[in-house]
Image (tube, rainbow, N blue to C red; front, side, top):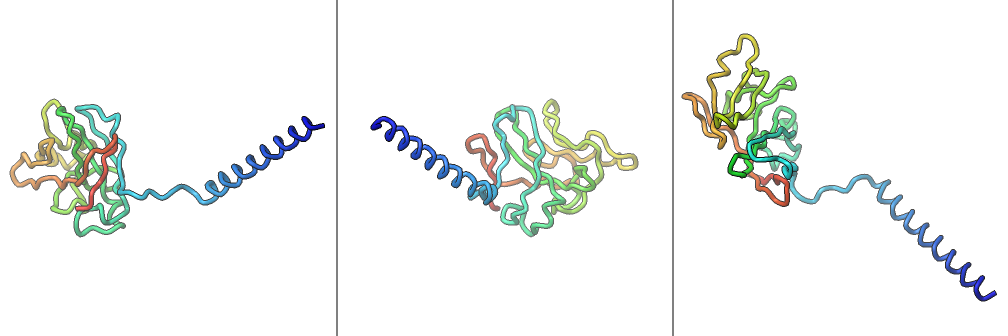
Length: 175
């Protein structure tokens, strides 16, 4: 009889623990995903030297270029590249109709020159339009170094995104 009581007590304890665990997990699930306490970031752990990626702009105006508001984030794309030296850099670029545009204004939220393929070329060490839309061949003239400095006359430098690489993430910093 003593063994039976011990077994019943153990089972009651396990049921109580399961109910408590279920309640805690259910509460966490019902409350939705946790809010990130830190600044927005982009995972760059697998971004190899000489490669790039595109990321959406955060809706938090504190991390957008000066003078832009949260609704402007939809008109921006973030170009994140890792140079051959291993350094990660990021630049704000205009987006229109799902395409990245060639920057034509000091504000990256201003509509850019239409381009089918705007990307860095690590062989030539520049960033630019690789395939313009018909009628916009002049977009090919604009070039920037991989550090965002203008290489073409009459072209403004790219607007850099302030940030740093931390634990495999490119963490944006408020300008």
